Each structure stands twice: as C-alpha cells, then as structure tokens.
Length: 440
Ligand SMILES: Cc1ncc(COP(=O)(O)O)c(C=O)c1O
Ligand SMILES: N[C@@H](CCCC[NH3+])C(=O)O
Image (cartoon, rainbow, N blue to C red; front, side, top):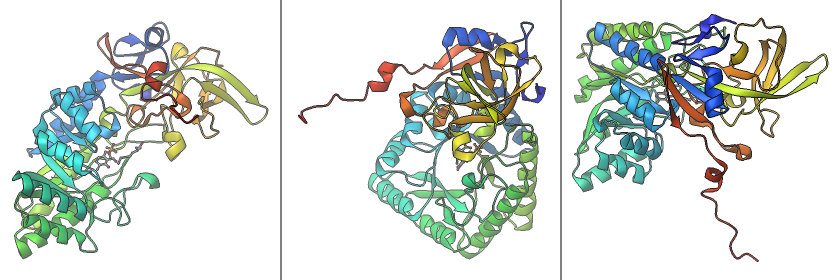
C-alpha cells in the first residue's frame, strides 16, 4: 500500500493490521461494529495547531474558524474550543449543537444564504460573535430585528469576488454566478456596504469571501485578496468604510488519492498573509485581522471509515464488484461529485495487491459506488476495508436512504477511544414516525 495515506498516528502494526491512535482497527470493528468512522484526534489537533501557529509566527491577529459543516457533533465542537479555534456554523442546528457543546459564543460565526428569522433570533439570543451576511434580504431582516431589540451585532459581508478556484465544478462558490454573497462586479457589494454602514445596530467589521473547496494552489486566494482589498480601499476613500476583518474562507485541499498533491497548510497561510500585508501597504489600508474557515483540511484526512466486506460479483472480462456494508448513505461524495478515494484491507494491510475491485455500497442504486478499480489483495467475506480521508463531508452528509442506520463515530488517541456519535438503531429510525391514523 501507499504509506502517504498513513497520516497522523496511522500505521500498520505487528499483527499486519491498520492501527490508528494506538488502537488496532480490527479491534475497533469488533467492539463497535461496521461501518465505523474513526478519527485520529492527534491529527485533528495537529491540523488546528498548524493553522494557528502559522498565523502566530507571522505576527498577525487571526481567527481560524473550523467550518463545522465538514463534521459536526458535540465532541468535535468541544475539541475545537479546546484547540483555540473559532467556529463557522451555517444553520440553526449547527449553532444549537455548538451552544450545547459549550462552544464560546463570541467565537461563533453564522453563515448561510437563507438564515431564517427563527435562526437569526436564536443567534441574537445567544449573542454570537458575528453574522456573515449573504444577501440584501438578510441584511434588511437583521436590521429590523436588531433595531427592534436594540441589540448591536457584528457582521461581515460575504462577497463573490469573481475568482474561480481550480477545483471540481460543483463545489466552486466564488464565481459571479453563485447563490452565495454580494457580487462585487455588478455593484451589489458596494450597495450592501453602504446600506450596512447606515444601519443603527449593525457594526460592519469587514468582508468575507470563499472561493471554493479542495484547492491545491494559492493563486485563487491571492487574486481574491487583491480584489477585496482594492475594493476596500476604494470604499474607504469614497465613503469611509473601514476594513477591520478580512475573512478569506476555507477550501484548503487534502489528499484523497495519489493524484492529489496538497500544499503544506502553512504554505497557504504564508501566501495569504504576505498578500494581505503587501496589498494593504499598496492600497494604504490598515492591516486587518485575517480570518480563515477551513473544514476539510482540519478533519478530512484524520478520519477513516471501516467497512465489512460482504458479497462479490464478477462481471467476466469487465470488473469485480466488492460490496461493503455501507456506501452512499455514509459517503455520498463519490455519487454526488464523482469524488475519488482509496483504501486498504485493514486486517491484511501489508499484503500485496493482486486483484482490482470496484467497491460497491449496499443501497438500491447503481450509482452507489465508493471506489472504482481499487487494487487489493484477494478479498474474502468479512475482511475489513478501510477507506482513507473520509473525515470531512462523510458523516456530515450521511443519510438514511433505504432506511440504513447511520454509522457510529469513534475518536481515538494514545490508546484511548470514545464513541462520540452512537450508531443509529432501528428504533432510532422510526422514532419520528407516526403510525397511520384514521384514513380507513
Ligand atoms: C463559506 C464557506 N466557508 C468554509 C468552507 C469550508 O471549506 P473546506 O471544507 O473546503 O475548507 C465552505 C465550504 O466549502 C464554505 O462554503
Ligand atoms: N460537501 C462538499 C463541499 C461543500 C463545501 C461547502 N461549501 C464536499 O463534500 O466536498
């Protein structure tokens, strides 16, 4: 196998099994069943500290906000709080979970292109740190609610700088034709800044842009920063706008397969900071606080999924299907984005690959495939397949199609293990259902 995928504490132990956090993955499956998400807590902490230290070393004031859409539960919020991270939430549900986890409210940033009045009121009640306002309707709503409550809020305006990051089409969010944010090119950004500056209880602190996800180069960030700062300088001149915070979003890429060559995280930060420093100087602006909001790069490669191998189907001269006991219900990314993954047999991790299998899920759906053409040793019934880098947008996007219960999630570190999300039971599956009443 390719050892590049053994990040953090992952290794192959003397039993020839994949090990993570000092614990044998086969033991984990015996104890907790499959499919099972396992997170290497050491690796998550390491990613957080890499971001935070990179800013520290460059001497800039920063907030690193974990984009919790990547993976959200009480325990991850608590871990992020302990690591000194801020938090990006995009719904009342994420916000509620963060508050229940005791996450410091002042470090919560509320995103989303259609925050409901109810969600906004909840966030106002919690007195969160900042709203990232996405559109004119939200701005008007926030103005109405804060005025009625006489409550001051900090906001950033999300703008679309018209920069395309080189990544998969479906997950680009920075171009002009996007459902997110105020467009800079057509003047909506400027109009929003003017409006916000006149609102009595709104404190416009700065600008936000997010140019896409799974980005492997820094050019997009450099271009977006340049555009934002140029605008900020113009608005400072023309109507006294003061940029205190510049949030450049998330999107830092990780390795899913051998084709992915991610940059070291610190490299993105160095480029971002040096561009902000250079451009603020050029445009005679004060150096703003720099905020980022990584999701995938914080939890993505720290997570693996363990599946049990079930049935096999040989299509002679075409391919061999190997089915596992999960699929698009725990990882919809291959079906949704054609996302690529790799994996190993966790119980025979150092055996030579001699077959090629296409890994199928168990849903009633032809598109329910996890990996095409994966080289593996000859697989047997009940082998354990470990799929790497499933920590981001895996469990977070899990669903109950075909009434398949969602997996359990376990955190491991230094031989310690903890279930942070229990496996869904059949009882859980019907707990919101109501039996048919009197239609007959
Ligand atoms: C506004 C915003 N911030 C942050 C993120 C996190 O992105 P990633 O997980 O790629 O770091 C996303 C998702 O793409 C996003 O839409
Ligand atoms: N869910 C996507 C990323 C969306 C990013 C959120 N704006 C993924 O799995 O890659």
